Image 1 (cartoon, rainbow, N blue to C red):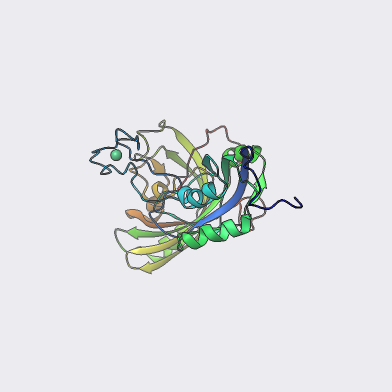
Image 2 (tube, rainbow, N blue to C red; image 1 turned 90 degrees about the horizontal axis):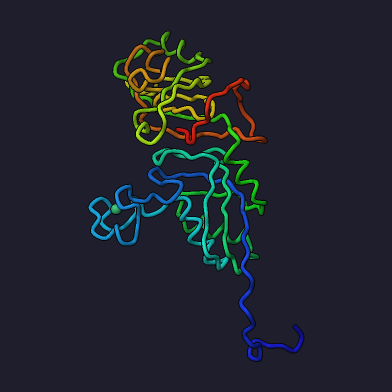
Length: 287
Ligand SMILES: [Zn+2]
């Protein structure tokens, strides 16, 4: 305002608080980084209960940071917001990289007093301070329904895995497994059965590539319907996934390294599975 300097300005009422939604995609380039805050399962990070907790030594969390925290610890203070909430389009396991064009998410900012920050400068700041752990696509302001869109829409995914096999596999057997394009039946994996209903579901899987890296190691590229548990499809999870890659190879197999190469959202080029009629319940996660 003309004639008004900082010295003469009287503090007015605090600016109004507003909520906003920022959409982007993250690439996760460091293993061991969870998508969201990894609260200690024993004390749940509760302020009082975490004191003296033997599982987290009172830290309340099992990892120092997460994709959510790398973003929120810069974004929330700069926007002078009360809280940030992370809504991902699914999630990969903590030990799985997220490559390709990255995983879509919406960061919900609650109670921002300073919502009009330079989003590109903010993005660069977040990425620089993450020291190579994550990269972000430019933030786009969206409306709240985008949260629901990403939560409820399912996409095929392409994975790369390094598979360890119990015994060398003949080239012909590898070639046969490399041609697999079909439907598998998967029961809820043993590792998540304690928190999810034990269901048998059909999932479409197409092997895109399979080649030896060493006598006991293969590189797999595979296109999976949403909700496929890839690690269990590789091992068979004690016959809970069938036919598994281990079945196709005729030897014991397990996933040693896993990366999401791409999430086949609209606009991302690459292979797609044929749409299938399905009344199967959707899985909440993947990988
Ligand atoms: Zn704890």
